Length: 473
Image: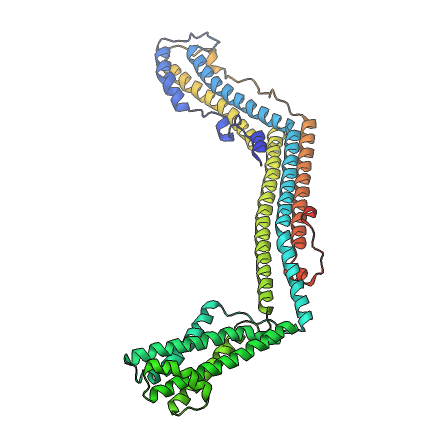
């Protein structure tokens, strides 16, 4: 988002302050020009002549060498000032670019908010309608209590198996007598009888809940189911007890199976064995427990637990969408604000650096003064080395030129500062800050609006706010 702005501020032609001015290595220059050797050699020959008033070629070489470094530094300095000057002239362009960036950031964020509004419309409507449906269901059926939740199929099936195992374990000893396979055969018979008893009682217990319904047809079907369970439980457990009676009477297993039902029909309570009565009691108790388990597996009022589950799923879906929306919008908000503040800071820093360099006591200007002073001192030092060596080796008087100190022409910048440009740049920097702060306020306002309009489930459930269509988002 800030690539274009960064390209405007990119300082490819702008040298760091410490790199603008080249280093003047006096020792290297002295060695390169062999100032001591040249001074001694020329001094022994009394050169330059005693009447010379102009620098000789050695002194000229020193002056030229220092002057070249001085010009290089001043050219770099002028280049930097030109870059800073041009940066001020681009302040208006940078301000417009930041305004575009701020507008895009605010617009993109609003688009993201609207996108989430559209996505959440379905979950919002679903939660609202599901809650209203449960409210209507409660009012219609005079329910004031919360629904009983289904415990889950794993636990439900596990308890059913426990009932079967418990009854089978108690009955296998009674069915092992007279069985050719002993305890194993008795266990198999007990498992079959117990499985039929428990499974039938559980299923009929679930269906018998219809007696709680306010609808008379559902209530009637529930009564029929309850009657069917009582009849089935009695007939099944009495038949099993008579079967056990026939086994005690030394009746063959095959014949006992065939005679059990007729014997029960002829005399239901005509049991002659205490074991048969115990078997009847165990089977009846397990049948009652299994029936109650089926009765309480779901809410006793038919359909109530299903409606409650629908509402819970709607709440979970809405909560998940809400959390995802807030998390994403918060992240996008923070990123957008950081980039906007970064843009503002870059522009202000760039303009501030340029103003400081052109009008104030910046690091660049400080280094310029130091560099010019170093040029003068280095030149005087190198000339003194050559002249001292020359004078020491001479036999006649030193020329007047050795008494002359060389001075470079005063430096005047070719890039004058423009006060109007400075004022305009400072104004544009203030406008950049204003544009950024406006965009940030809009982003925060859109975020808060999104939080309010997405609404918490409690508000939707109570129906206190009208659900907005997706087009309105």
